[in-house]
Amino acid sequence: MPHSIDEDFLALPLRALADAALARARALGADHADFRFERVRSASLRLRDAKPAASSDITDLGYAVRVVHGGAWGFASGVDLTMDAAARVAAQAVAMAKLSAKVIAAAGSDERVELADEPVHADRTWVSAYEINPFEVPDAEKTALLVDWSERLLAAKGVAHADASLLSVHENKFYADTAGTTTTQQRVRVHPQLTAVAVDPESGEFDSMRTLAPPAGRGWEYLRGTGWDWDAELAEIPALLAEKMSAPSVEAGAYDLVVDPSNLWLTIHESIGHATELDRALGYEAAYAGTSFATFDQLGKLRYGSEIMNVTGDRTAEHGLATIGYDDEGVAGQTWDLVKDGVLVGYQLDRRIARLTGLGRSNGCAYADSPAHVPVQRMANVSLQPAPGGPSTEELISGVERGIYVVGDRSWSIDMQRYNFQFTGQRFFKIENGRLAGQLRDVAYQATTTDFWGSMAAVGGPQTYVLGGAFNCGKAQPGQVAAVSHGCPSALFRDVNILNTTQEAGR
Image 1 (cartoon, rainbow, N blue to C red):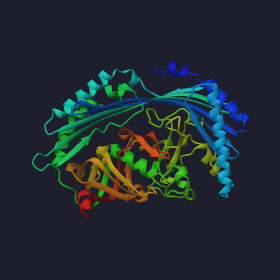
Image 2 (image 1 turned 180 degrees about the vertical axis):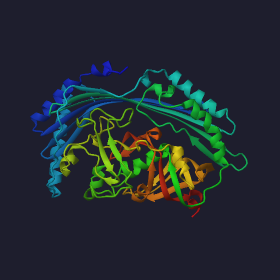
Image 3 (image 1 turned 45 degrees about the vertical axis):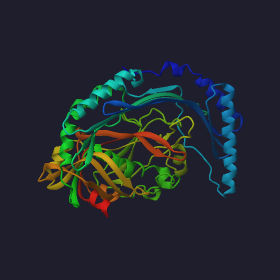
C-alpha cells in the first residue's frame, strides 16, 4: 500500500514560511528565489560479535532560501520557524548575492547565473517505494535481528568475529519557488551489512567477507527478505571465507574478467558516474575528487567503450537511492542517455549548467544533503543497461578459457580526471576452460576508463541485473554526501591487466 506524506511534517508551517521568504526575496529584486524545508532523520546501529557497539539517531530540521540577484547566487538558511525569521533569511540570501556580484565583477568576469526553463509543478507530492518505515520498528526488534544474524556467522567454523550494521534514513522535503512550483516529498532508504572475519591462529593472518546485499530505497521489509535472500547469503559466507583464507595468490598478468554487478556498480560510479557530471567536466568542480577526462568538447564524439555499452542517467528507478519525484530546483525526475552504443551522448545537469551550455532542460541533478547546504549538481542513478535476451552469468563464464570472476566491492583508486583506476573485490574465482576453479587472493584489476569499457565483449541479460549503490558519495566544499544507486548486469571484459596486491605493496 503506497504511503502518504507524514502528517506531522505537513502540520509544520511550510507554506507560510515559504510565502514569507519568497515575498521578501521578490521585494528585494531577486530574479529567482526558491525555498526548501527539510527534515532528515538518520539512524545508525552497529554490533560487534553480536553485542551492541554504537548507535545514533539524529534529526536535521531547517530551511534554506536561495536566490539569483544581479546575476549572482545568494544563499542563507535558518531554523527559527517564524515568518519574520524566514523573511530575514531571504534578505540574507539577497545580501549574499549582492556581495558575490561585486566579487565576480572585481575578478573581471561577466558571467551571469541564469537558469534553464522548467515547467511549473504546482502542489505535487511524491513518496518513495517502501512498505515499512524503519523508524516505526522498535529498536529492540532491529537489534534482535542483527544479533541473530551475527550469531549465525559466529557459530560457523572458522569465523572469529562478526560485525553488523544498519543505517536508516527518512527524508521529508518541501520546495517552493517564485515560478509557482511547490512539491512535497518523502524518501526512505536502508543499508544493512554484515562482515565475517577469519583469523589463522598460527600465522596471525586474517581476512574478511562481507554481504553483497546493496543499500536500497526500501524500508524494514528489506531486512525481512523482500528484495534479498538474507538467510541464503548468511549461510554461504563461512564456507566462502574459509576457502578464501586458503586460496592461492593470483599470478599477475592479462586475464578475461567476468564482473558481477556487486563489483561493477562501483566501477560505474567512479569511472562513468563522476566523469559525466557536467560541472566536473567543465571544471566548475575540481577541489573535491578532481575534474573529468570526458570534457564537454567531446560530447557526441568520445568513444567511451565498446558498441554494446549503453548507460543511462535515471532519477526514476524503483528503489533507487537517487530516485526522486523532483530535485532541489523543482525539476521533475527523468531518465536519459549518457553513453549510447559506446559513445558519450549526455551529461548530468542542473538548471544553471543546462542553460550555460545550451543543452536545454535540466535533467534534475540538483541536491543538497541538509537544509544548511546549498544544492549542488549531484549524481543520478547511473546504470549500465543489460542486453535484451542476453546471457546468464554462467553463460558468460562458460565463454572464458583463462580468466577471473569478480564478486563484491572492496577498495578502489582512481585519478583526478576519472581515467586511470584500480579496483579490488570481496571474492575472486579462477576461471579455467569455462568453469570456476576455486578462489584466488590478492587480486586487483587495473585499466584506463576507455580501455576497460572498450574491452567489454558481452553484457548479461536482464536476469543478471542488480541495483547496487552507496549511501556516502562525497562532493563539494563544504562537503556533502548523497546516496546513489547503479544498476548493471554481469559483464565480460577481455584481456584486463591484473595486479597482485601483495607484490605491489612490497615494491
